[in-house]
Length: 258
View 1 (cartoon, rainbow, N blue to C red):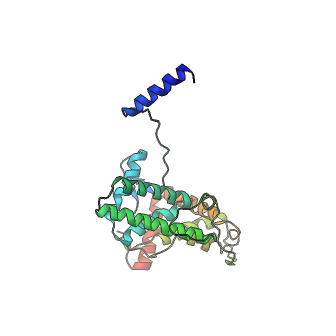
View 2: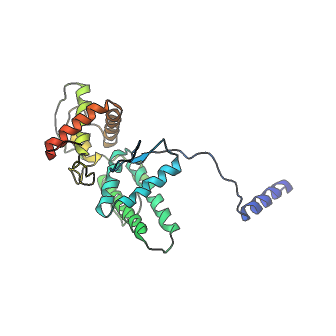
View 3: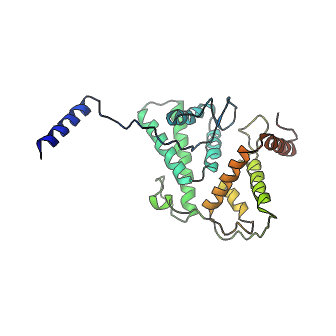
């Protein structure tokens, strides 16, 4: 081994020993696993920021919001974001590593926040099991998804035999947007009291497979189409969205959104 190499190794070890090991200061890639909006805080499941957040601030906030919820409300909060994110294994992998990391940093301390993190991990384990069942892989304990499962397509069985024909691509997109609004409907002023206690994007994809031109598409493709329709809905005319939402709320609950 050359003297120069020995010198570099020695100084690297010395720097590390004193806690000055250099690290990559480039910003981490921002991946919006949890849905967020820019603006004042609203008591719903979205994350809110006064301006586009940095990755660490965003990651901190999505866990900080756990303090708002208790018990099954935590599951509804996670369901809301999980259903909207197209890459389900990536979402679960991110959430598992983040939650486990926080639990480990807490050591043996027991408090309310730790209990909530444990509920998050229980929810993650449940969703991982459901994904494995969806592709026919045996469920063994609470083990994370294998790399093979992460890259698999979570396709539904071919028993969906609907033959609905929507007249026009524009109408099809509007129909998907309508289903998205209905899926997320809740009692006015009570976002934790939804119309559906369980209605995921996988369920929505199953409905869409009743449409002739969509029935042969795989679930991940349908989820991408749902995500695109949701994006177009949110960036469209907010007045039209609010009018439709108010009409749907009044239809189901007898009162419009205030």
